[in-house]
Image 1 (cartoon, rainbow, N blue to C red):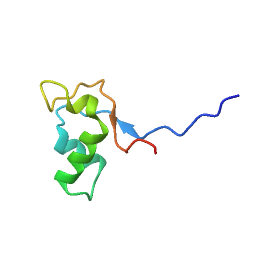
Image 2 (tube, rainbow, N blue to C red; image 1 turned 120 degrees about the vertical axis):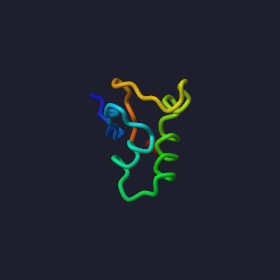
Image 3 (cartoon, one colour; image 1 turned 30 degrees about the vertical axis):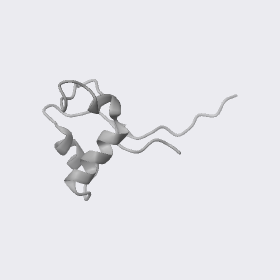
Image 4 (tube, rainbow, N blue to C red; image 1 turned 135 degrees about the vertical axis):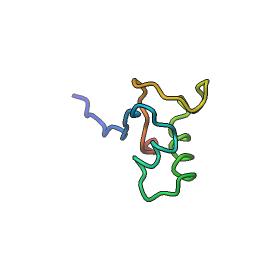
Length: 68
């Protein structure tokens, strides 16, 4: 039987949230610019979307880096 690995932390955006608002909610205490950069680097599938900066309610936003 296969063992399950720990899942990566994630959230869904709230209505009207942008990168800055999401970063403030999920990475409190981290300077805004740094928090936004982290989230964008962990979520290239969203960062590369056009128009940039808009979320869909069905988006999965990773709030932690990938496992090593």
